[in-house]
Length: 340
Image 1 (cartoon, helix red, strand yellow):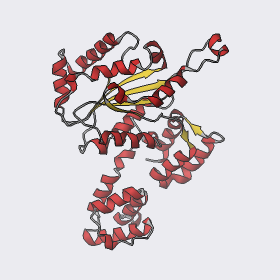
Image 2 (cartoon, rainbow, N blue to C red; image 1 turned 45 degrees about the horizontal axis):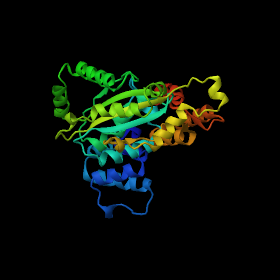
Image 3 (tube, helix red, strand yellow; image 1 turned 90 degrees about the horizontal axis):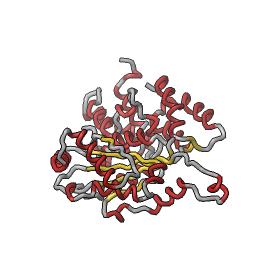
Image 4 (cartoon, rainbow, N blue to C red; image 1 turned 90 degrees about the vertical axis):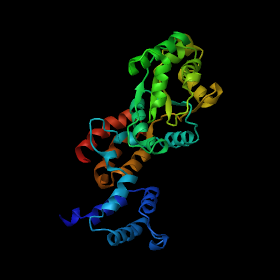
């Protein structure tokens, strides 16, 4: 083993990458006495003190310390795989904080509704995946089991009965059962959290009477059949994409407000409790600022600053923001090449 690969230096490198809150979690879980660390010292000094303490408490491999670090900041989060989500971890802090707060206050005997919205270039599906794997893991479950994510995409504008019939047909196919009560019992007896999601777009909104489309979808899950004594989370997500609108001469002549603008205003005012359910309309998924990408690099790829920072400068150039799709297309290949 080279000196560079020694547990002491590897622990130092891992601890240097932690945010202050994460480092505090390590100190707590590792049961470091308050009097052992210099209170007013910078984090780098406390890291040295922590490692010296660990060398006294355990063998030189620092096995227990690494276990705590991995619990607080799992390395597997940044492993390369075919579904690499690392670029999708850029920002989305507002959405994460508001969702976690709402879920912590939620009574899990009932479904929880979440409305996600943003333009079609914000990678809604991958945001949903990131939300499941990282944003939702700690607040809703202590289990390491993955949360099932079940798509229930439907055609809107056909009326509430047709919409509910389509949702039920998809649930029957998923659970291989034709009886709604049996399906509800299966869902209620699950020992883990479950997420169902339905995608919508601007065209669906126009065809189905605006906010009534949201209300019709909620009505299916609001049925008394879904009230039970289970204590896992049943999360119902509506993923809304703002898509390009068709305009005509008259709408331009009279300067008619765009449909997407009207929908955004509607979502800003919308409170899901008006439909008698628990839920939240998340802040819109917006473009990412350059400073947010730089913060992401400092947090997760400190050892690759010399590679990534010039790429960020060249990519943004004079632009203030980029869509998530643009960022993913740019940085995912770079991460695969350099940041294994």
